[in-house]
Image (cartoon, rainbow, N blue to C red; front, side, top):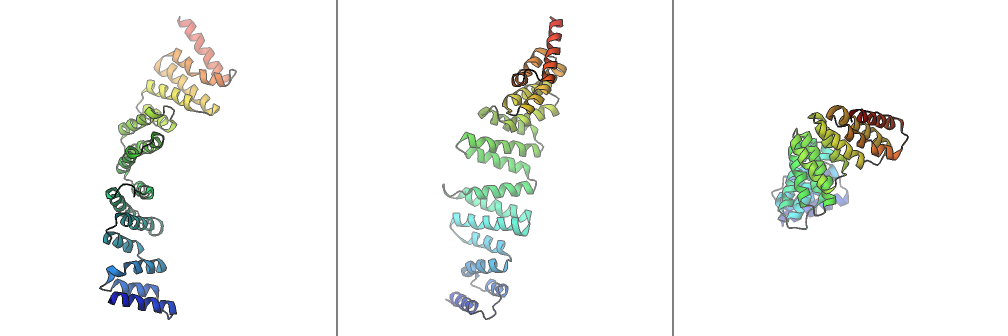
Length: 272
């Protein structure tokens, strides 16, 4: 009863405009022994005076027994820490709490905004291994494989940032199992093959990138790289000639591709 009376008095004074300062009013409420009952009013006042809203929202989240509401409060607190307070550590802590509450809630109450907030927080804090694990977990729970592929692609990139190339390659191959023309995964695997000086794999991935690429200028450049890799590094001139076919199909008179094919044909004839 006392808390309700105090609340009514403050609201009356505020409406009358008798000089009640929102910040002072919020401080009085916070010091009240009935603060748990007055927290919704604290949130309203904190929005007006733009101070310590994240902490009040976190307290509200911890007090409520409604898991969906708790997750929403933690999310808003995390977003405020991110956008207004620029506190990456607090953003991560609050987003993690929102995610954990959501994971424990009943099915059908999940909010993608909570996952996105946690992803941003992990990235800003350089927690690449945890970010990769989060992406993989979300991909497992995604029903449509077409939606799962870009999520897995992000996981592969996070593994690479975490210094785990083997894990990055594993996840990239999962993407290719659903879409053999997935360019980000092919590019990642080609990059890893180049770093590991695996010429055969590099040439093979270059061929696949040519097949997946739609831009004819990029197809030409990649076809020349693949052909050179097969011929100079792997020593398979027939495969090198085959790598030029997409570029010649786009433009049979293309000077670079035509000259390279002519040279390879001559070398193959001399060899035979």
